[in-house]
Length: 217
Image (cartoon, rainbow, N blue to C red):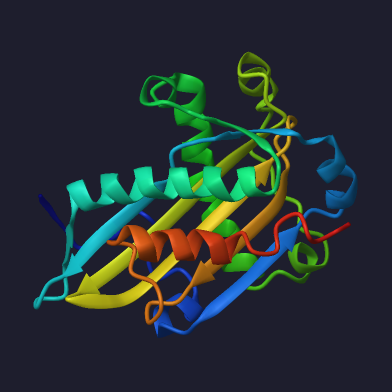
Protein backbone atom coordinates (compact mmCIF):
# COMPACT_ATOMS: atom_id res chain seq x y z
CA UNK A 1 0.00 0.00 0.00
CA UNK A 2 1.07 3.59 -0.67
CA UNK A 3 0.73 6.61 1.61
CA UNK A 4 -0.90 9.65 0.00
CA UNK A 5 -1.17 13.22 1.25
CA UNK A 6 -3.55 14.01 -1.62
CA UNK A 7 -6.33 11.90 -3.03
CA UNK A 8 -5.80 10.69 -6.58
CA UNK A 9 -9.51 11.13 -7.14
CA UNK A 10 -10.13 14.85 -6.49
CA UNK A 11 -11.10 14.66 -2.84
CA UNK A 12 -12.49 17.76 -1.21
CA UNK A 13 -13.44 19.61 -4.36
CA UNK A 14 -16.77 20.89 -3.24
CA UNK A 15 -18.14 22.22 0.00
CA UNK A 16 -20.84 19.61 0.32
CA UNK A 17 -18.29 16.82 0.22
CA UNK A 18 -15.91 18.53 2.59
CA UNK A 19 -18.66 19.14 5.13
CA UNK A 20 -19.82 15.52 5.00
CA UNK A 21 -23.40 16.54 4.24
CA UNK A 22 -25.89 14.32 2.52
CA UNK A 23 -26.46 15.43 -1.07
CA UNK A 24 -27.86 14.06 -4.26
CA UNK A 25 -28.72 15.68 -7.53
CA UNK A 26 -28.55 15.29 -11.29
CA UNK A 27 -27.54 17.46 -14.21
CA UNK A 28 -29.11 17.09 -17.66
CA UNK A 29 -27.94 18.21 -21.08
CA UNK A 30 -30.48 20.60 -22.65
CA UNK A 31 -31.25 17.98 -25.33
CA UNK A 32 -31.54 15.04 -22.96
CA UNK A 33 -35.20 14.36 -23.88
CA UNK A 34 -34.22 13.80 -27.52
CA UNK A 35 -31.05 11.84 -26.76
CA UNK A 36 -32.80 9.45 -24.40
CA UNK A 37 -34.96 7.99 -27.17
CA UNK A 38 -31.94 6.93 -29.26
CA UNK A 39 -30.32 4.77 -26.61
CA UNK A 40 -30.90 1.07 -26.25
CA UNK A 41 -27.43 -0.39 -25.70
CA UNK A 42 -25.12 0.92 -22.97
CA UNK A 43 -21.38 0.24 -22.67
CA UNK A 44 -20.40 0.43 -18.99
CA UNK A 45 -16.74 1.09 -18.23
CA UNK A 46 -15.14 -0.06 -15.00
CA UNK A 47 -15.53 2.83 -12.54
CA UNK A 48 -12.55 4.50 -10.89
CA UNK A 49 -13.11 4.34 -7.13
CA UNK A 50 -10.52 5.13 -4.49
CA UNK A 51 -10.85 3.83 -0.93
CA UNK A 52 -8.59 5.57 1.59
CA UNK A 53 -7.87 5.15 5.28
CA UNK A 54 -7.50 8.36 7.25
CA UNK A 55 -4.24 8.28 9.23
CA UNK A 56 -3.62 10.05 12.57
CA UNK A 57 -1.12 12.45 10.96
CA UNK A 58 -3.74 13.64 8.46
CA UNK A 59 -2.45 11.71 5.48
CA UNK A 60 -4.47 9.04 3.65
CA UNK A 61 -3.49 5.46 2.99
CA UNK A 62 -4.72 4.15 -0.36
CA UNK A 63 -6.44 0.76 -0.04
CA UNK A 64 -5.57 -0.90 -3.33
CA UNK A 65 -7.40 -4.22 -2.95
CA UNK A 66 -10.52 -2.64 -1.48
CA UNK A 67 -10.54 -0.06 -4.27
CA UNK A 68 -10.37 -2.79 -6.92
CA UNK A 69 -13.19 -4.70 -5.24
CA UNK A 70 -15.28 -1.51 -5.09
CA UNK A 71 -14.68 -0.87 -8.79
CA UNK A 72 -15.87 -4.36 -9.76
CA UNK A 73 -18.89 -4.14 -7.47
CA UNK A 74 -19.83 -0.70 -8.77
CA UNK A 75 -19.63 -1.77 -12.41
CA UNK A 76 -21.85 -4.78 -11.77
CA UNK A 77 -24.32 -2.67 -9.80
CA UNK A 78 -24.55 -0.12 -12.63
CA UNK A 79 -25.15 -2.96 -15.09
CA UNK A 80 -27.99 -4.33 -12.96
CA UNK A 81 -29.60 -0.91 -12.56
CA UNK A 82 -29.57 -0.29 -16.31
CA UNK A 83 -30.84 -3.78 -17.10
CA UNK A 84 -33.72 -3.13 -14.71
CA UNK A 85 -34.59 -0.16 -16.92
CA UNK A 86 -34.66 -2.52 -19.91
CA UNK A 87 -31.43 -1.43 -21.52
CA UNK A 88 -29.18 -3.91 -23.23
CA UNK A 89 -25.91 -3.55 -21.31
CA UNK A 90 -22.36 -4.42 -22.30
CA UNK A 91 -19.57 -4.42 -19.72
CA UNK A 92 -16.05 -3.34 -20.67
CA UNK A 93 -13.64 -6.13 -19.72
CA UNK A 94 -10.14 -5.57 -18.25
CA UNK A 95 -8.46 -5.99 -21.65
CA UNK A 96 -10.70 -3.38 -23.22
CA UNK A 97 -10.04 -0.97 -20.35
CA UNK A 98 -6.33 -0.96 -21.25
CA UNK A 99 -6.91 0.42 -24.75
CA UNK A 100 -5.40 3.83 -25.43
CA UNK A 101 -8.81 5.19 -26.47
CA UNK A 102 -10.50 4.28 -23.19
CA UNK A 103 -7.55 5.42 -21.10
CA UNK A 104 -7.80 8.79 -22.84
CA UNK A 105 -11.55 9.04 -22.25
CA UNK A 106 -11.19 8.16 -18.58
CA UNK A 107 -8.40 10.67 -18.11
CA UNK A 108 -10.46 13.44 -19.68
CA UNK A 109 -13.49 12.48 -17.60
CA UNK A 110 -11.49 12.98 -14.40
CA UNK A 111 -10.85 16.59 -15.40
CA UNK A 112 -14.38 17.19 -16.64
CA UNK A 113 -15.84 15.61 -13.50
CA UNK A 114 -13.82 18.05 -11.41
CA UNK A 115 -15.16 20.97 -13.44
CA UNK A 116 -18.75 19.75 -13.16
CA UNK A 117 -18.53 19.45 -9.40
CA UNK A 118 -16.72 22.74 -8.96
CA UNK A 119 -18.84 24.85 -11.32
CA UNK A 120 -22.31 23.31 -11.03
CA UNK A 121 -22.27 22.22 -7.37
CA UNK A 122 -19.83 24.73 -5.91
CA UNK A 123 -18.03 26.56 -4.57
CA UNK A 124 -17.10 28.28 -7.86
CA UNK A 125 -20.54 28.25 -9.44
CA UNK A 126 -20.87 29.30 -13.08
CA UNK A 127 -24.44 30.48 -13.83
CA UNK A 128 -24.01 29.63 -17.52
CA UNK A 129 -23.19 26.01 -16.69
CA UNK A 130 -26.17 25.81 -14.34
CA UNK A 131 -28.59 27.15 -16.93
CA UNK A 132 -27.19 25.02 -19.78
CA UNK A 133 -25.38 21.87 -18.69
CA UNK A 134 -23.01 21.22 -21.59
CA UNK A 135 -19.82 19.22 -21.06
CA UNK A 136 -17.94 17.19 -23.64
CA UNK A 137 -15.36 14.39 -23.69
CA UNK A 138 -14.71 14.40 -27.43
CA UNK A 139 -16.17 11.86 -29.83
CA UNK A 140 -16.60 8.31 -28.51
CA UNK A 141 -18.35 7.21 -31.68
CA UNK A 142 -15.65 4.73 -32.76
CA UNK A 143 -15.59 3.11 -29.32
CA UNK A 144 -19.35 2.71 -29.36
CA UNK A 145 -19.46 1.42 -32.92
CA UNK A 146 -16.78 -1.17 -32.15
CA UNK A 147 -18.94 -2.44 -29.29
CA UNK A 148 -22.31 -1.94 -31.02
CA UNK A 149 -23.46 0.40 -28.28
CA UNK A 150 -25.37 3.69 -28.22
CA UNK A 151 -23.92 5.35 -25.11
CA UNK A 152 -20.97 5.18 -22.75
CA UNK A 153 -21.35 5.05 -18.96
CA UNK A 154 -18.51 6.27 -16.73
CA UNK A 155 -18.25 6.58 -12.96
CA UNK A 156 -15.88 8.02 -10.37
CA UNK A 157 -16.03 7.57 -6.61
CA UNK A 158 -14.17 8.15 -3.38
CA UNK A 159 -14.34 7.21 0.26
CA UNK A 160 -12.17 8.22 3.20
CA UNK A 161 -12.69 6.21 6.38
CA UNK A 162 -11.27 5.81 9.85
CA UNK A 163 -13.10 2.73 11.05
CA UNK A 164 -16.37 4.22 9.79
CA UNK A 165 -16.76 6.29 6.59
CA UNK A 166 -15.93 9.96 7.09
CA UNK A 167 -16.94 11.13 3.62
CA UNK A 168 -17.79 9.54 0.31
CA UNK A 169 -19.28 10.30 -3.06
CA UNK A 170 -20.09 8.68 -6.38
CA UNK A 171 -20.66 10.34 -9.75
CA UNK A 172 -22.06 8.61 -12.83
CA UNK A 173 -22.16 10.06 -16.35
CA UNK A 174 -23.88 8.94 -19.56
CA UNK A 175 -22.17 10.04 -22.78
CA UNK A 176 -23.64 10.09 -26.30
CA UNK A 177 -21.57 9.21 -29.42
CA UNK A 178 -20.30 12.73 -30.11
CA UNK A 179 -19.04 13.01 -26.55
CA UNK A 180 -21.66 15.17 -24.82
CA UNK A 181 -22.48 14.20 -21.25
CA UNK A 182 -26.25 13.98 -21.46
CA UNK A 183 -26.87 12.92 -17.86
CA UNK A 184 -24.78 13.28 -14.71
CA UNK A 185 -25.62 12.15 -11.20
CA UNK A 186 -23.76 12.86 -7.95
CA UNK A 187 -24.59 11.25 -4.63
CA UNK A 188 -22.90 11.06 -1.26
CA UNK A 189 -23.88 10.12 2.27
CA UNK A 190 -21.20 8.70 4.54
CA UNK A 191 -23.73 7.93 7.25
CA UNK A 192 -25.83 5.65 5.03
CA UNK A 193 -23.35 4.11 2.60
CA UNK A 194 -20.06 2.31 3.09
CA UNK A 195 -18.21 1.79 -0.20
CA UNK A 196 -16.11 -0.94 1.41
CA UNK A 197 -19.14 -3.24 1.46
CA UNK A 198 -20.99 -4.69 -1.52
CA UNK A 199 -24.31 -3.78 0.11
CA UNK A 200 -23.34 -0.16 0.72
CA UNK A 201 -21.95 0.34 -2.76
CA UNK A 202 -24.95 -1.32 -4.40
CA UNK A 203 -27.28 0.97 -2.47
CA UNK A 204 -25.27 4.07 -3.40
CA UNK A 205 -25.32 3.17 -7.10
CA UNK A 206 -29.08 2.60 -6.93
CA UNK A 207 -29.65 5.97 -5.27
CA UNK A 208 -27.38 7.80 -7.72
CA UNK A 209 -29.27 6.34 -10.70
CA UNK A 210 -32.71 6.54 -9.06
CA UNK A 211 -33.99 9.32 -11.34
CA UNK A 212 -32.15 8.32 -14.49
CA UNK A 213 -34.52 7.84 -17.42
CA UNK A 214 -37.44 9.22 -15.45
CA UNK A 215 -36.31 12.75 -16.22
CA UNK A 216 -36.92 14.54 -19.47
CA UNK A 217 -39.71 12.19 -20.56
